[in-house]
Length: 131
Length: 130
Image (tube, rainbow over all chains, first blue to last red; front, side, top):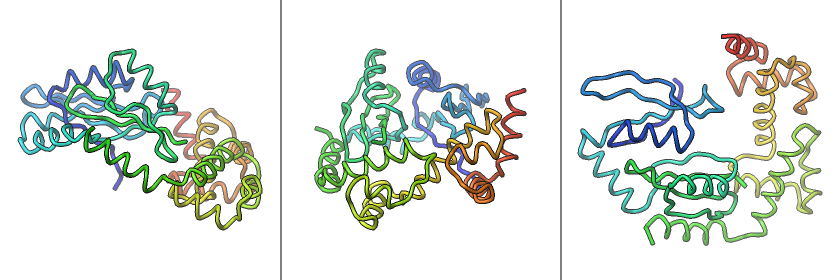
């Protein structure tokens, strides 16, 4: 058994696809059409295309508890997941320049530095740099 | 302030309150990052920060979840993958990342990646042709 990656719940797959590729810089790996206009849509990091995949999953659209959970996390400011970056401050500056909104500005937490932004699809995402 | 921000503050004041320890382990990690290709022993690392080697081992594991040695091996394997993907020979790669024995390099590489260095390289090179 192997770990495939992780999924992120999104209301609108196309909107999420644009945010995660154009702003965050991920690239498309697999895009399989499913029923009802939905897709099995996964992304990978540019420099780790064999690495874990990110599944943009339209769960909150069809399954109420998923939406409730997602909203509760958002309300509490809790990130859905986190991504590693080489430099949090640089990513913060770059993403802020692209209009991305941060709920937590670059903050040192012992051996890591973190920041949290809004993915505009219903989730907070944390970026982490190991110090 | 959100629940999460409060949690960050709380964790900062409980888990990460000892800045002296944090400065030490960060310096050690940076040292490993920059000297992974040299012969690194706990003695070297502890001299460099003036702490006992057992204390250093405990501290590093406490903050990074790995011993310095495990961290070093992971680092070397990551760099070795880059070398192999670029076509560097297995022997050259082994010594370039700081391993002293080809046998232990191959074994470690297979344990960590599931493939021997030569298998890994063949896959990477055939992929770049495609």
